[in-house]
Length: 102
Picture 1 (spheres, rainbow, N blue to C red):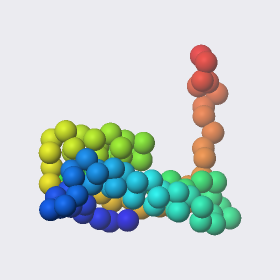
Picture 2 (picture 1 turned 90 degrees about the horizontal axis):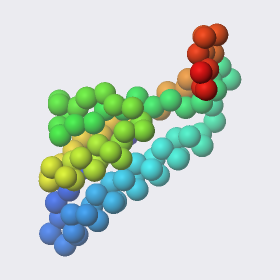
Picture 3 (picture 1 turned 135 degrees about the horizontal axis):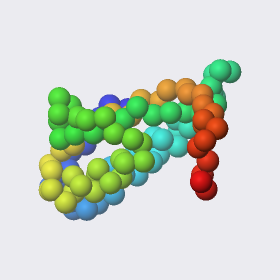
Picture 4 (picture 1 turned 90 degrees about the vertical axis):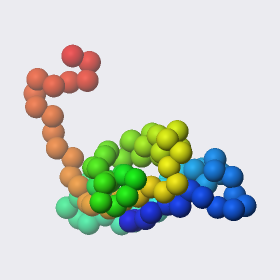
């Protein structure tokens, strides 16, 4: 998904446009995660970019998307660009010294 979201509409309120953008992203991620994985992959990874324009977009983690959209809302942006590309990925083992509780 490479999309510039327009956050101005004569009849739709600004907060509803933000909610619609978040719902659109959530629906896209769900659709991509349900696709069949290649044999060599364990999960779908996502390469994401977010910015006011396509040229100013910065690389972000997929978990930051809602926070970034909320940031755009707080700054009253009229548009924002979001790019999400699904890539098959393989999990890697952690080094021996790294554990969750240690």
